[in-house]
Image (cartoon, rainbow, N blue to C red):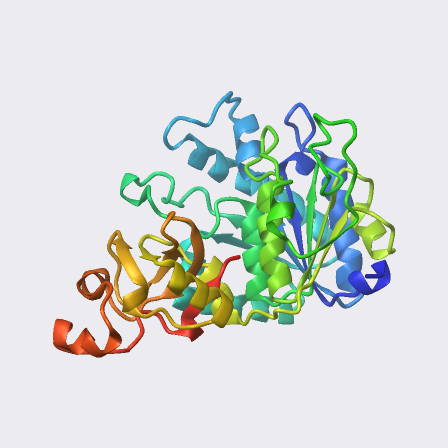
Length: 381
């Protein structure tokens, strides 16, 4: 795809990683932050809608409190509380120079996982953009309880870093383009920090298993890494959005991107056009329970887009309620899809392996022939 076509976007989500917002000594990279603000202000003045997803609160708070570690219970949350106000002061002052209003939005996993909150958030964000305001979004580490609550230790959360958060925001708002700025030039054929022969990949069409295998862990000070960026790219491209991963330490990199310079790795949209509800089921919910299915059911779901019938289920994992989203796994416990169940976990255990016409005899009632209908299943592969 031509770079001009790729950057032709009306609604843009920009994600700034921790390591592009601070210098190696942990201090705020003030000039770089203001260069980002200047570039984003130009986009707003040109009539584009800009949504900023920013990291940095925990790191800034850690530096302010002169801490060496955030491992102790509650310390990371305290650092986030201290650092968030400091982070927002830079954005408030910077965008204020250009007379552009901003809005702070701090989000937790439940803001996406609970459908009514997901829809409310979308309405609010759209209205903020309608008013010409730049939403500035961060994970609400101060109140997020997923990582602290031992009862929820088995939960698969919809996001645990701002790479995935930026993808969820892009999905919720049907953004045209997600730009992820980190301290790396883009996706390489190998880890460039350990392999001098690694080459930058300029364009990716389809985030396949082979592409995912190129993902690496987070660098020091961050929580994402290339793997989470690839997961973000996979979601966004599945609904028709575009993703660019680029080096945020390039001076005025945002302006250079929209001047069509050959920077970073472009991830092209697929033709799948995954609808909003299926995006939410597949990527925006917290998962507690699961269903293990046989090979025939797996094949029917992935190749024929079929509903999941009780005869194809071999095991039920954990407890869940009717209407919740669960993992759908093969007999090797590998998750390949997610779906919204028509029966709770107790009912599912009673009808495992049964024919649909026997559900009423077993339960005394029948809501649906399928445990999960095809419209409520999202494949992940």
